[in-house]
Image 1: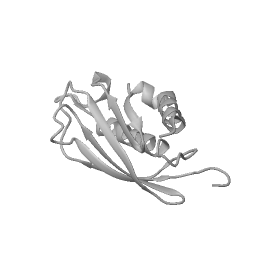
Image 2: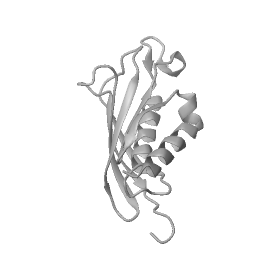
Image 3: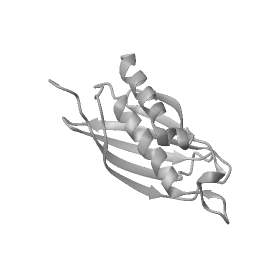
Image 4: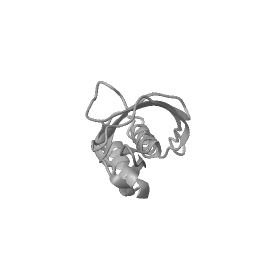
Length: 143
């Protein structure tokens, strides 16, 4: 893969204010795939009685990983935005554990990219959530 889309996608994700606020870390990225993790943070607890991270933080992680997968697709779009993201929550994330989203941009058309993403904690056999999404796929002028 040309390193330019991979580098651009990583820099774009690392510059997002919400990614920094939520502690996102780009674990791996390239060829239309991205793995981004979020550490457990008490500020993100959605249920104080159980210590479970709020679903909104998990969906933000999944959305960001999905956008990163689109941005590093081999076709190399110049920009992307979420059109639709359907999230299915399977179970609460285990308190105290890092959550990782693994996203794959599996199909692109002239203007839309399609993504699948799974979020897991340390129990990678049992997803915390799964999602499918559609993203704009802007190839730039003359593409």
